[in-house]
Amino acid sequence: MSQSIHVIGVGKMGLPMARHLLAAGHAVSVEDPSAERLALAREAGLTVADGLAQAAVVVSSLPHDGALLAVAERVAAHAARGAAWIDTSTVSPAASARAAEACERAGVMHLRCTVSGNNHMAEAAQLTVMASGPRALHERLLPLLRCWGPNHFWLGEAEQARLMKLVVNLMIAQTSAMLAEALTLGQKGGLAWQDLWQVIGASAVASPIVKAKSVQLSQNDYTPTFTVGQMNKDIDLILAEGARLQVPLTQTAATRQLMASAQAQGDAELDYAAIIRVLQRASGLAV
Image (cartoon, rainbow, N blue to C red; front, side):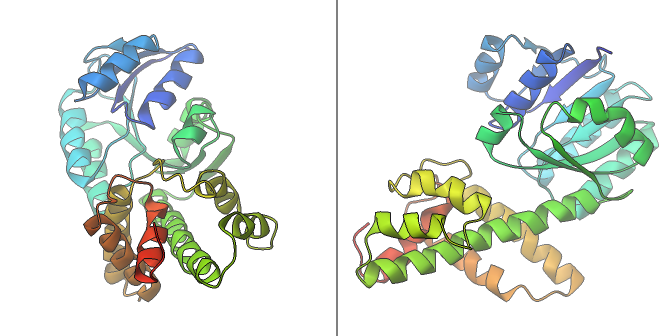
């Protein structure tokens, strides 16, 4: 059944997600602070308008806690009572809980719906979708969520989806740190860069993310799917949650320092795997 959907935020992830909803036959309006992103949305056939008040479902893809809370205020004030809000952002569980409370007071149903995967996976509708919030709402909205990818998990009634996203991103960040040390050790010892990637890709440690990264990184291509700056923000969320739960995240804290070094060395807008370059520089290798 076609639904009226308003999408707030059509960045690298939000735009393909909105396009998939449109392709599924829904009436989709979008908004974004970037004129460039809105132009791309128009080219994709999406309607650029403030359709929040008329939407049965609001979807958002936002950069940080502040943006989430600002949108929560708007949704609570202007969305129709009984509307549903799906937010896909990577934010702190604490901010998410505040947003959910605002929605509950306004009679708006809220599904936290984080996604795992990069912009290429979003384009291909191959995201993994992790949801929490009212189970009945998740079941009702599942046909929309299936537009984004084949793998779906309902994790609980509250902020479980936010925490799960931080767990997954912790492992992604640590994979880049592992690669940085391993590749630099091999390269400094005389192993050829291409040989390193070929053997790693055929080995027991060749996870899907390692294989995906090898396509670009074997060519020293650090075009970002997710930047150093963006990963710094996510690691800060992870470390804050570790502190709140009294879980020592010593390896993640060390990786944060490598990310800070990459940013200080001018690589903030490169792919987060650019921490490989930090280790190469520290080891006297040319970058």
